Image 1 (cartoon, helix red, strand yellow):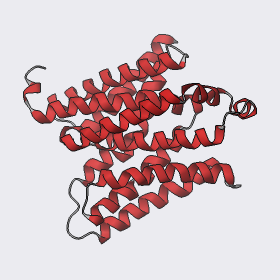
Image 2 (cartoon, one colour):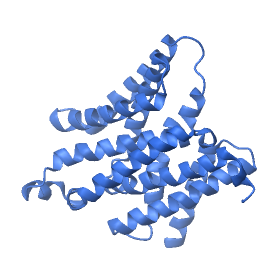
Image 3 (tube, one colour):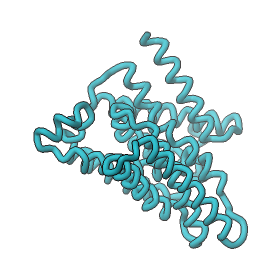
Amino acid sequence: MIDILQYEFMRNALAAAVLVSIACGIVGTYVVVRKIVFISGGISHTAFGGIGLGYLLGINPILTALPFSVLSAVGIGVISKKTKMGEDTAIGVMWPVGMALGILFIHLSPGYAPDLFSYLFGSILTVPRTDLIMMLVLDCFIVGVVALFYREFLAMSFDEEFSTVVGIPAQKLYLLLLCLVGLSVVVLIRVVGVILVIALLTMPAAISRNFTYRIKRLMLFSIVIGMVVTVSGLILSYVFDLPSGATIVLVLGGTLLLSSWITH
């Protein structure tokens, strides 16, 4: 293990594993409790449009994926709450539109699109320091927002109608929560890719829920489990020369099955 740390790309990968686990542990808890797993999948796939735009404009795709993710989160929330269109239909609209825009932008961009595969399926071993700084900033923002609105998020997570009755702006907070999901997607894209984002947003919290139902403990357990499992998957992918994103997700899946078997 110590020998691995002599390489800068492994140190960056381990730092990325820690940073994504913080975002996943906090936001993933609300995703699981609120049962909005497929919304997070819709947001992550819509973000592919932002990645394609980055290739077209010749800038870091993560920078363009950020507004795309947040806008898609707000779009899904507004469409599902303000129109007759259901939540599942809103996801069904935004998901393919975002992917189609990404494909179109990449087709229009000059030359070959390098590292496209890593954005789809993740490549934690190639995360640069600039992306680590962005992950850190987004993590700080997520932690700050959740700390500021913790009580309101807690009330809304378990009874949205009652929250509205007692004066909590539940719909606005719901849109804010979806924005946090969008930010988490951006944090996760370089680690597990657009296709596998939904796994890291849900599995650590699902594993933790086998042991506790208290929100604060769920968040803490999810962060710790995310760190341990992500680092374990990273090391296994390095040792056995396997795709990092897929290995991390498979280790998460195995851990979830094991925890479910132990607690039941």
